[in-house]
Image (tube, rainbow, N blue to C red):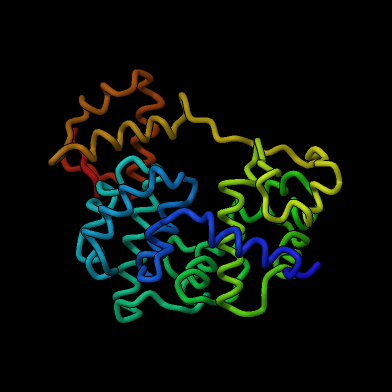
Length: 290
């Protein structure tokens, strides 16, 4: 299948229904796009928006962020979760200043070499900030391609070679059109072609969708494992980080002990935060953000 049967109706739909998001604005800088991509990893748009706006107001360029401490970046990250993303974004800003004259590099290879930038993030920045042709496979795009292109309800838990080949075959050849295709597919997956209750009656490619034409067969591949939260180390780390973020200075261990009753789990999580470089010991029994 080529992209043409899906391309025109999808782009027309996107022009009418796309959400007004600041990182999609034509005036958004490559740095703004990069910040959005870091923040949107495993985090809903509604939670990202206020933090993103505050972040760009405070640090509108990589140099502005690089001039701060890593701890300040983590503090400003707030409750977005996965605070190592803030740490890595801070490190990437330093690399951009040191090695790229303070400008986000345009090439996929140079982006991929930055701290915290994997295949998806490099492809997304190169596509959305610089209008280049790259396969961009986030969760929403993968689901749209699986349904419309492969006739499957859901993609496999991890991208396969066949999935990448399909994505490449569907991607328009022109760079700017390819970038528009990717962001439109992403938006369709977020608003219409959702995981649990796809609104097929509102889908602009419903008459060209292989999954709908096949009668919407149920997914029969490997199980998709959801991420637990309650009682996990992630929750404990989050509570410890919340105390440290809200403090103006070092925090006594007793304040950290008060947020979680299981001493063994709490100590393990505090040790992991120290090992990750998110937290430093400032005294015999005091801690702070790095």
